[in-house]
Amino acid sequence: MISDENIERIFASDFESLDKIAEQMITEANLAGGHDNITLILTKVTEEYPAVRNIVKKEVVKRQ
Image 1 (cartoon, rainbow, N blue to C red):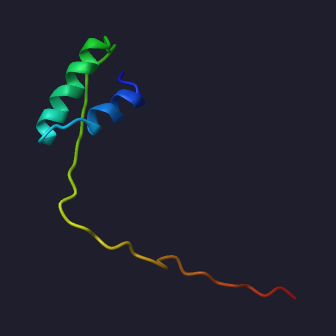
Image 2 (cartoon, helix red, strand yellow):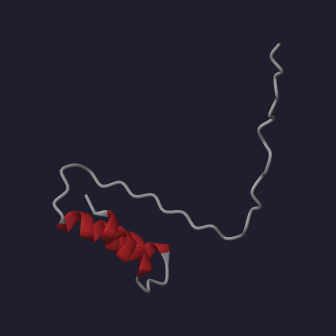
């Protein structure tokens, strides 16, 4: 398993693509001697998506 600090370091590195980041993360996981299979999922956000606000309807119940 890769530590959170190593994951942060890899993402902060100057890799030009997710493929390179994935390769580095898998290499580090192998070097760390993982006890199981290595699974890695990376995604890239390509455009901004506005956050939806007020999606939960709040109701005030008056008690008597």
